[in-house]
Image (cartoon, rainbow, N blue to C red; front, side, top):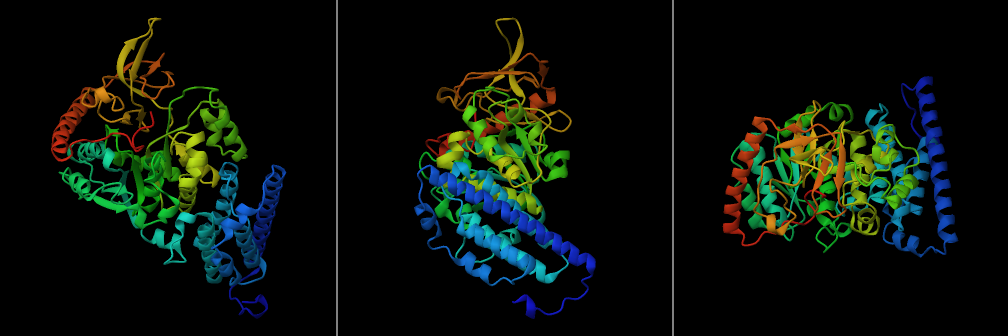
Length: 521
């Protein structure tokens, strides 16, 4: 509608006009910055011998966003929104994807601000314009959100979240059924967690109906298992979870978190071991404060990932206070996050927008070209998605701990060694570790060897060879013993796991153990 023929607006005083004017100025500034960045990127592309063919191919068959944008009311802020949508459409962030993580973050911030404003505005017309703009932008920026049957994919998705709900989400497939069964049984039968558990998979080719039935049999307490085929939620053509050697098992995790019906998501790898009820994560101060709780990886291989760190700094030009506390960022350690457990509150619009960026990093083309080449699997995509989208998040206070068995090195120093990584709660008590109950599930000759860890260490020096199958150690800190209660519960876990293995072996002649949905090593 032309602004000259718009109906008079009621109850708009001078203060409201000032607020709208400020918003308009801010959006104009954002648009100018986006245009400048686009022109600079275009200049670099041409200066390196590029052409415009990739832009033409990306635009083909995708005109709905700009057609819808033309229907937005013109004038003032609405005109700026229309121009911004036009810019997003005319300048898609195509390959090389390595160079556009930051640019997508800037665009995501704009859309996030629209969404937050729409949710707090008391002006119905403004809310309608912003809500429509958000949907158009989401379809443009995140192709996996495009579904033929809807023009409001984000609102539709958020509408499936059960308000106030919390639950456990595990992405698993046929090759991780064994470890997933261990997790389900220990959480329910031993820890007596009543949180609902949703198993997410990518079609029958990923997790067969037979194995879904098997997993359901291991629930002896609490609600029945739920199952979600993620390919019914997102445009699977951009995802290719089941493509060979593509890391699809890792990639599925982000989409499982986004697509789950739970508002508060406790995303677990299929091989985690909890020593406390996972419910404690929901009251963790970091999660309560930000709605996004992450866990640190080990402090390893300092100054040994030059390309990764250079890329991070190219894409993250204005690091947050959280990132500036990161030792991976400030002291050049190789890895920041252990993504074996991720806790997200999707009732917060900002968290959802950051999660969209995380998902984009895990689509097939992006992960194969960049993400899984410069980093290891999905692990760094979580904090990067929220960081680039300007969304708050927090990590646990400590970098990863070691749980295992005490040894003495050649210098007589006490150390703790194993094949897993441990994490503590807000009170520095052991909470969970990755890698499963086997002593080392990655070694073929150890696939039946269980052993209860007896010792742990935190905030000391990590030792590890580059090979992912090699044992890690922590040295130079205080060797602590697991409590009698912790040893007893892990012993019960192992007994339960052995029972499950007998049932699985009777039903499944051979179970592979590696598809990327376990710990990162």
